[in-house]
Figure 1: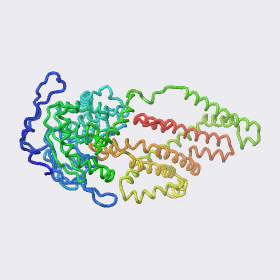
Figure 2: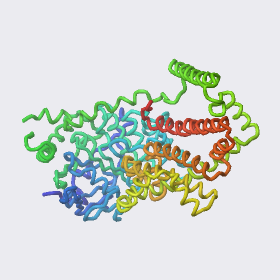
Figure 3: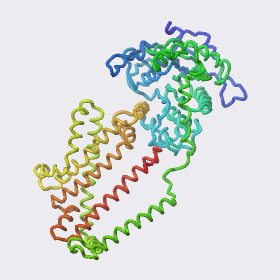
Figure 4: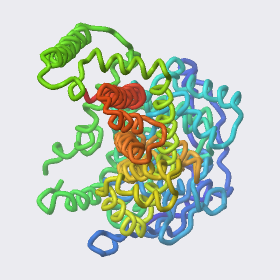
Length: 306
Length: 296
């Protein structure tokens, strides 16, 4: 049972239809039900079918990094992908972003085959994704400039999205003058400013301290609720995945496969320290353990076991 | 077994947590601009040292000239050289020489930078070119550019083109090799981010790859300028068209040691000025923009 495509695409299972209402974080005091994303049986936003990727290693042998991955992401969904390091999570995002080509299989976005990078899918890197030779403002403008937007529109949008991530007064700073958390917020603003349908996030908070990460989780959840973007979020932190995702896909280690999927049916906004989050994370972690063992063995030899 | 060792409470493999620490430190002073000029004790001390050093050097020169160990037509006094310099400026011959030489240098250098970058990019991104042309470029760099003079004269005659050709051969290899290295050393993530944000083709090169590789190629650009500058002066000495090299040779022909040394001083001074004003500024700007530590 590698994955359950019936559930992923259309089946109006209880968990997808009766999603708990999302409280708008700005009105956190008075719980208001915000009608979000209607779950319909339309074409998936992103559709991966039998996607495989193999590398040729230096010694000449072939390494199967991704093995026949089937995955669908619904419009407006927050999908988290977890797996041990080296399982090909990041590679999977690069494939969806169009930065790399799969060896075989089909990747489609809104039913159309992905062949090259496009500004409808923006990738946020773990770190160092900002251009150090540009100011914060110029970084945010970059994607819009490539799209050919007018100067005034670029300025308006930049102002809007910098305000969204609370960095308006840092618009003239250079990336190296900001803290890690601020830099990731700039990267988020830069991605959002091109108004993509899909945000692809590659362990964006892994290099941050716990407090900053907590704060960015809140901000990201809020922005997601407000903008209705589809998000594919890669992490190796299971708790983070449960904290953020509507659904968590668990990847296996070498070859990378989608081993199991979990629907996270917890009310939002969530918190990393909540008992339910921890319990769900524990449950997923039990399934992840074998894969982590495999990855540790590959890294340290056969001595280390959990 | 040792669950605690591998995971912390958040379910993160502990290697990650160790990476988390230490990243945050350099962001503590977001507003401090590193290029703000504050004359401190260090600068005053440096200037004092320099003034003393050059005064002693000049005094020694004056003393030796005053002692007349060697005849003045072989070892001129500093004031005689200064006089020659002043005379040269007065009759505009030095100014014209400087202008002509600098013009040649600018044309030759710009040409080398453009061609060198294209060549370097080609070599860096094409395996075939790297294995063939790349090796040739490195071996060509061992050839002093003055060796191109006979060939240049036969091809172009005693013309401006021939001089530019020699300058080009002096500069271009440094620029090419620097661009090739820069392209390879440049973090791949910038190209990925650029493509991801919709840059492709020439715009990817212009807006992403070029600025991203600049810190890696700036030393090569500097070296290219130095090589080109030497090639030019050498070529001018042989070609005997107007320029600093020709003024130098004219000094020799007229047995005018004052002019020889005056022109030499101008060549040194110009080289220093360009290095100081152009390349130091570029390096400083890059350092402050990228947040690189200034290599003192």
